[in-house]
Image (cartoon, rainbow, N blue to C red; front, side):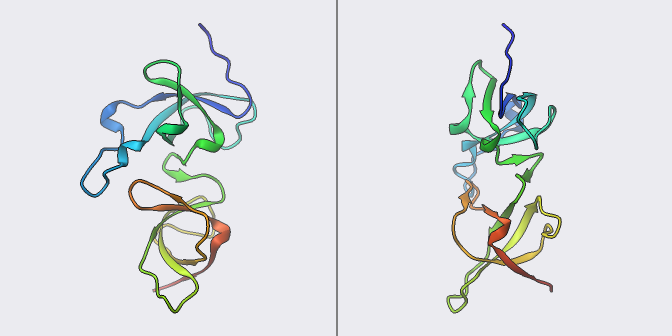
Length: 148
């Protein structure tokens, strides 16, 4: 059976179990995410290429065989450990109740002006909470950064 991927869909093969996120005491829900190798893409996929490693929530994967499945481009959380365009992966720091903005350290970013390790101040709003207690936020939520 030959499969033809359409539109914004991605065909993938799960990486071996040894390369998957593992549950730990500090990350009890890490197994809710899976790493996969992109084997084919639809004609409307813009930011993901064949051969990329993507990270997905298990709930957004449609498996068609034991280790082969597909998803939509918008379901991808990370591509090669980098968040999607316009998104920033952060680790929230303690919040000062007197300040309207929260602060965080950038884990990774796809934005040219937001760097890994940078301390940023952002307005809380919609975010994607990940199983390791980090978050994905939109770069538009970030107001400024602070240098040490």
